[in-house]
Amino acid sequence: MFLKQLELGPMANYVYLVGDPAAKECAVVDPGWDAPAILKAVAAEGCRVKAVLLTHHHFDHANGLEGLLKDAEVPVYIHRDDAGPIRPVAADLREVEDASKMRIGSVEVEFLHTPGHTAGSQCLRVEGNLLTGDTLFIGGCGRVDLPDSDPAKMYKSLRRIAGLPGTLVVWPGHGYGDRASSPLSCEVKDNHYLKSAREGREAFLGLV
Image (cartoon, rainbow, N blue to C red; front, side):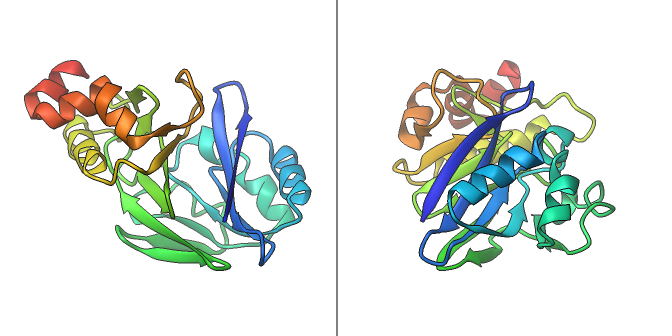
């Protein structure tokens, strides 16, 4: 598989291309801000866009979607609890649930429902990688003070992530940390939000 990280827009968003180089197919994860730049990166990889995968519905992760779909009429995958705002834009919307899977060529993508930042926030597990959207950042976690956020659900989601194999590489939805990616084992050790979630509900809620 290949994974390419693009930083686009005024909010340091990360857009990802995930694909199978042998099949020359890829998915675009969280197409924010600049559809032409995303399509240029796809062309540079010699691939065709076969799907769009959304970690959640927020505008900065999806405001390039309409432009992207004008060039590539492909299915859009999002958790069912976040599908409402995306439905008017995506003609072929695939609503997924926790543990749903799909393939890009021979590359399997597993959707892990991790609510808290939004009701339908999800992480994407792709081989040894975990694309965490706005659930988990390098050294931080997503906001839980927004209209559809829930601190208690974020606590449970972070505990779940902390229990995944430490060898997974975390690829966040924004470039807010001191590096672009990080082994999950390092985040479990050094990320205060993950550490407090492991300590217990009250410790985490006291931090956020």
